[in-house]
Image (tube, rainbow, N blue to C red; front, side, top):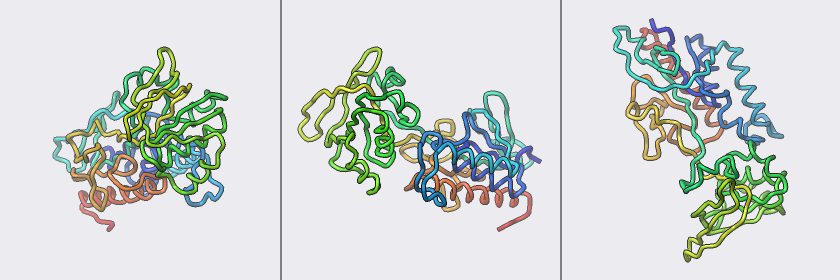
Length: 316
């Protein structure tokens, strides 16, 4: 019999929920996470749309609650980065996959991929060079470093507007740059941003060049309507233009869509039998804590059913 019946990869909201459900069901489960448990929750100041918290809850507190509850249920969390997943050539059907980390190798019957996503880059010269020197992807992490300074926020969704509102507590002025003429964020966020005296909007523009040597000092903008270029000075550039899934290590193992997100069926099973996916790494419409939790619970049940099927028992 396999040492583990289920291995979960990733400790964001989806992975921790999957771990909670699998552990409570009495499965032999371990969760592997390369960093601190919590995922994107750790990068969010206040989460206002998670049910049960009408006044909102700080992201790091919610993450700690998730972790504490999963550990109390008996989940084992190991801090290791998964490097490779491969089929295990074993006669025992419950030893189907090998999961390799930098230090160990695990054998398991089933896998839940909850590996999350990370902020997309603009892909411009000097972007990586000036990251940490004015370029940032996390206002919660870096906002206090820009007190009374002028910054630029790029993006138009909920994340960009939430981060702009958070930055307004510290900075002198924010210019929110978007290549279209309106925001995609929820109305409540749009209204807050429009009423915030520190936030200005620059529509129909995109950044084509990042300026600075030792540190950021501005950007070159291009008007998408007529191609005219202009310079905008700033000491900070916060980029929120979506996320890229952490799926490079499973390319060729399961089916991915054109953007690298994991394709699943209605039971959240991937193209590889016995491997399931949940959370931000999965191809879907909405990436929120509440949807991640639902998917985490569903994959735990689906993986449990799969393992019990291999053992000749069913809990459907």
